[in-house]
Length: 233
View 1: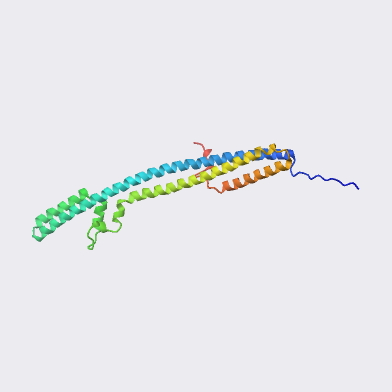
View 2 (view 1 turned 135 degrees about the horizontal axis):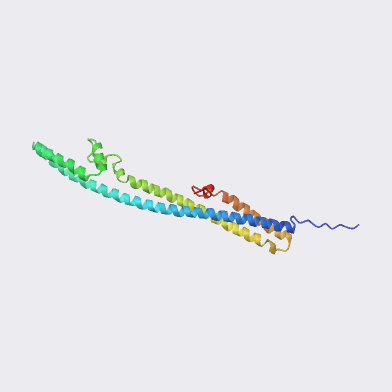
């Protein structure tokens, strides 16, 4: 009895593999272009945010120095006012109301000309148990209020820039994987045996799918709107 020799049919024919390679080459090329574009947008946002953060930090530091100078000036103003107040108390103790009135006018004029709005406001909020307006709750923070706002904005924008940098690096990694996929798809035809071609093609497709899934988990650039690139200007 003659035995029939059965040849195992390959999973894909040579023509099928060639078509699949061409299709996946095109898909990978398009996805590579997309990843490169989005990565460059992240890079642009990163550079913009870093510049904004540096500018705000510079402004914040300038405002902090200005606040410190105002505080020191108010401190000197208050010390001078204490000297005038001491002279006024002596005049009142001596019963010289005219001199006391002149000193009071001098005090009012001096604080108006030399004191900041923060100092004048704090003087009006002093209670009997306070020795100076600098003891008023929150008074010292007002000198650095603008500086703190600018520095906080700088920190937030810096963190946003760091996120853009991280996301841009992630897109670069996706591009590297796509490059490997393109390489593997390009060498499929080098192998003469269909099973070897199929294995290489299968590995390339797996890499393509995994890289694409990973890419879609990466956030898009802040404010990204695909339709805005086609809107009439």
